[in-house]
Length: 430
Picture (cartoon, rainbow, N blue to C red):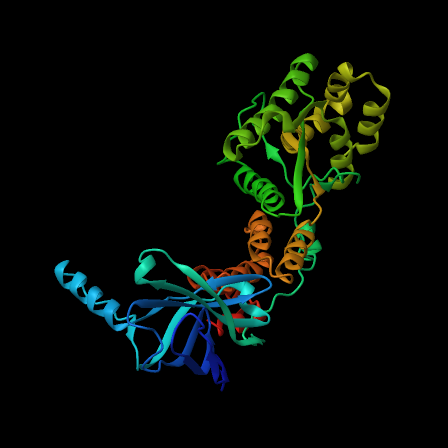
């Protein structure tokens, strides 16, 4: 989009140290994206600069926030023109077409890179410096003349930046429900038993091809990744309680239950690079609690007697008492049906906590800088959260205002790809 401001102006610049006058008219300022062009017509009467003098004229754009010198053109008297031509021919250099003769009318054009300070009340003035034969090589300032301005250079194509808002896309409750062993810090764990690692008798080695161990391990890993990959949650610790079935030596079973919990912790530590100190491993010993609950649910015969033995007999003597119940017939059912289920590492709890969303405050502080035209400072702030898509439109907008349209397009395109409608609009400006 082009914004053209044309000022029809006729100004006579009085040059008291010289014998003639020049006029400047048809001044035009034009901005197209990251460029500003200046154009005006210069008429130089025949006797503007005497034969022994030169006049250096430097247009300058300026306002209260900055200034920029444009290319200088030189009006030379006849004697100076001849001397310059002889010098350039001798040096075999090209004739400088900005050395203008008396009696010439020409169009001055110059294009410069747009800079943010040019936005408000832009003016154009001319600085004049004279040089004569007597002081050849020594310049004398002849003052400054305003020729246009102040002019408001409109910028309807500025990019739009909007405040960032907190991200509400945290872990979906339905997703959390799929992993009942995920526990938020401060809550009470459910002691879920649906995800269990089973072991062979008297063994603490995890066999991924047996039971449903492979699926259980995958589910635990998926839950851990869910927490670690969400930018608003933090993995705090993992609790694992190992168990043994009641047959065999009581002391051996206590150690076996600890080894089973450690086996799962070591597997997760190695496969997922989880620090060892994040694991809280407990030896659950012989799993009498689940024995009684399973007996109740599965309708094992003599369930009342089994429950009474578990509740009233010292732990070290319970298994022998069960063996003697009704000639050992109930015990055989326990040994074949229930005890394999008690050789496990379960009661797994993956603990996590919420992390605050700091990105909106950071992005919005940068936008405050952007709105005061402090684009470099805004960009520096935004780059600290460049991995968050909520910063991408603002980053692209900063690059646009700084004139770096390659980077602006890159960041705005990324923002548009994730559905930022404002970024799509800003892309159309490039």
